[in-house]
Image 1 (tube, rainbow, N blue to C red):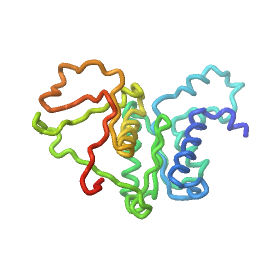
Image 2 (image 1 turned 30 degrees about the horizontal axis):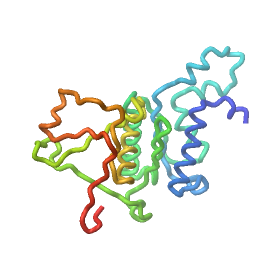
Image 3 (image 1 turned 90 degrees about the vertical axis):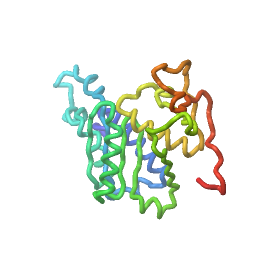
Image 4 (image 1 turned 135 degrees about the vertical axis):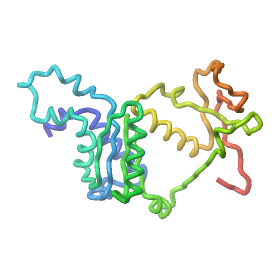
Length: 228
């Protein structure tokens, strides 16, 4: 109990978010206990280590060192919930969350784990094998923009939306937040407005490529025959 009082607050929040994410995906912590779940955590900052650096050594507990080190973020989660897959903490600055997501996907593809937890900035994704997703009835949608880089003004409008207009630059969590926003847009079948947008950068050749910066919520067009 003493350790819980001095652990990095980010570790507390991460464990809480893992429980919430697992419950939302209908995987209780009892169900995940002892299972082959990997953990990949993007750790961009060391705020707790900096904030506690001024504490004199005689006032520090034996847990202070491990609780401020980068590796302990993923290790703490795996140990506390008895997750038996690989666990990695990584810091590659603003791409930390996307790298964590990439490593989680690769882990599933190579069958090193049955599920993967990927996180940065409390944006927790719980990934699982495609065969398991199909078995569990998860909706899987895929949309492709054919020859995206060969667009012209004769192509249908390409509607643009940016996560920074909603949340600003979220540093290490920027990549995974964009991923989550795309998933939420698909779920709600619409694209959100770009907040505080006033004028287009003249260097962006929007008319040439038929690009549109959205200023209002725009629903996806209806598809024939109830297609998704």
